[in-house]
Amino acid sequence: MKRHPHPVYIIESMSRFVLLLLLPLLRGLLSLRSSVLIWLRGAWFDLAVLFLILFLGFAVWLSSSCCVLEDGIRIVTGIFRREDRFLPYAQLSSLRYEKPFYYIPIGAVRIYLDTDAGAGSRSDARLTLRKKDAEYLFRKATRWLSATRAVKRVYQPKWLYIAALSLITSNTLTGALFFWTFFTQAGRIFGTEFQDTIYTGLTDLANFLAFGLPPAAVILAYVILGGWLISFLMGLVRHRGFSTTRKGNTIQINTGVIIWRKYLLQVDRIHLVEIRQSLMTKLLGLYSVFVRCTGYGKQKNEVAVLMPAADRQEARRNLKLLLPEIKRGERTLRPRAQTITRFLLIPTLLIVAIGLLFAVLIRLLTSFGDTLLFVGIMAEIPAVWYLLVRVASFFHTGIGLSDGVYTCFCTYGFRFCTYALPKQKVARFTFRQTIFQRWFGFCDLLLYPYAEQSRRIVVPNLYLKDIAALMETELPSES
Image (cartoon, rainbow, N blue to C red; front, side, top):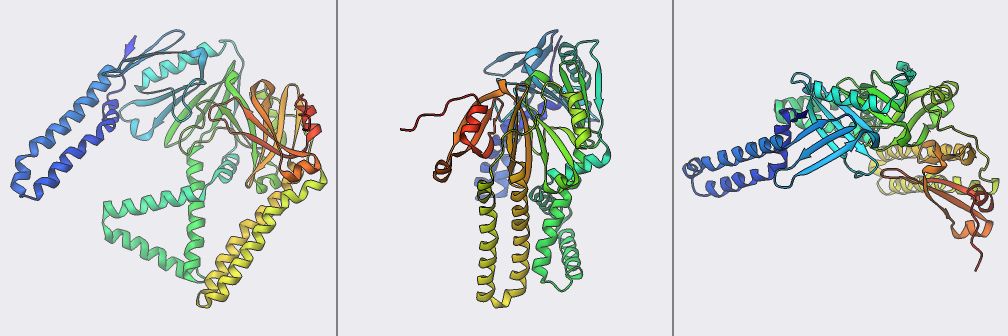
């Protein structure tokens, strides 16, 4: 049966025509140059523009419809140029059911549908439906992709593991931007007095907790710490109530409190499995598992998590439970001892450069010596931490092939990654060599998975002849 979107879609559609508001704004600026009376007489024009925007939003809603069929969903959109699309359930890579808290009173739900043929930056289809229509669509897709008698396997992580995931994915910049947005908007809503009160309170707190350090340095330190803490708490809220269910050829993921989300992933469309660690979680023996599937993890501040965190034994057991098709193997090739300098050179130079830079600045700007010394120490901490990461990276890096699955061990920045990539999901691979690597017969292996917004996997400093044999290819003859 054909259904129109939820009426709130009228308001959502009006944002497309927001540029029309420039017309009354321009008229107002021209009228005020004459007199207020002339501006009031032309108010009908402003009302006409607002009515036009509302009418266009209603027209978009009226011309949009969806029809949930037995084997797919038919979506019709457009006013002047009609588009009639049919998305078969069998071709869906992922389906996302999203229920923000502010939509609950009006019974609206957002649905996102993605296939491997869609654009990388947005979903193939986005619908705002009534709750009962959205649930009907989700049930239809689930029944089509899952055998009715298939065994249901459920994974629910401990609260501690949710906290570990938030710890790994916390971003100081995201938290700082969130606080800055709140601070500026609070000033506009509650007035400058409220904003000044917050600012004065933060300044007094910084002076109280300075412990003899320069106030500017203390404020910088607490901004970094506060930004990380806010990002950490946002991650806890986002992944509260997380669960993963495998049934037939589908994986269903539930997560969130303020914005409740439900994902349906088709197992055949999962391109790779990523096991991620930081240096701290590596020392603690904790693993977070992610998957790369079209449409999952695409939205802002969203991560494509399969298991928030688990110890080694639990991670292996649950991966076998949820995704037995993609088996993680062991390393058979790894960097040789003579390549360790390539792992340690950049962090060592970074430590020396930061030390020299702040030594010079302290001698030149003696009046700011205490502040510069503190900032220099703060800058050296991540550089030294990065050196420790690179030492661990030397012992982590490598690649193996087992049961038709490449298992790649590599490091990106401060993050240790282990990728399980089926052989048939490799779009192409490249051997990359610097001048120095060519002298000693080493190379970096670049693997390009067949996936939406494909990010390459780089396994560095492997012996060229060994990796060529593993990839079952011949080396080019020297010219």
